[in-house]
Length: 361
View 1 (cartoon, rainbow, N blue to C red):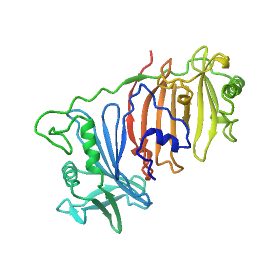
View 2 (cartoon, helix red, strand yellow):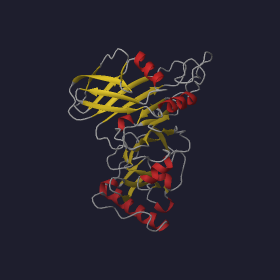
View 3 (tube, helix red, strand yellow):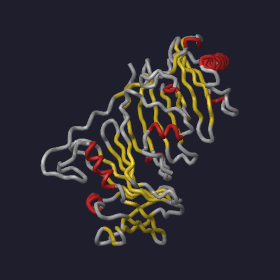
View 4 (cartoon, one colour):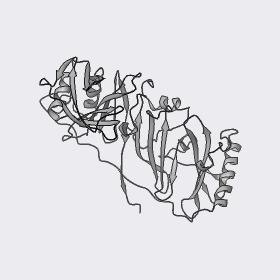
């Protein structure tokens, strides 16, 4: 399943049209599809490229290329497997377009995590040879005893060239594809330091929280009739109300449910005055759509909201991330995305925004 050009707008529409507004100030990096590869970079210009398994594959192998930005950013390449009944330790033989690779045909040593997942780090010299060979080769084959996995290289060169361009490496010695003899890549942007404030007010009693949630749901539908359903059956726990400080409350109300996604609205209420409630400002955007998150959960101990929006029930594509309350708005802390539905697990989704946490004042 392919989500068009991988844009976040189309991704949100596919996820049951649940709104996942992009934070205006976060500078979430781009993600782009190149035939059978997808690539993305985060706010520090650290980039990742992944090969895409065939849509019909039940057991998959894919290549993951990671490269930090900056003059000293060293690329790493790994082959990842998701299959049943993998041995704890095994060897894997590689071939390019049917010819043993590297030339000596030396197999790589591998081990599985739990009998179903394996990650094989490709040695630097082999990775460099594979990147060079990708200009002409079309398929990397990985063989384990009687099992064979195919990895398409179509689009890999374009993806790596795009990464070189994003990182300012074109025509420099450190470029992956279009190498030159002069110049260096620019310094990587710093990782932002972001503080999250835990909820500091006196915890609301169950009765207080229930009354506030009910009033907020009524107020929401007064402002825009039928904009929020009654609490979906079995999802009363998805609603919540927390005291962010002595007077300000965060209220979450579950408004719609699909087969695998629950959309919730988040509101800021001063005391119990829901008539003056404002949409929770995620990264400075106070529009209604920006206050809606999918499969979201607030932790009052950290002041952070996590979300996980599935683009389909298998949960192998979509977006996930977290926000932190900074006393005025919810700042994005982390954002990962996979725009193509190809059984790639969430741990390998491409990071498009990262930050470091610092203590709140």
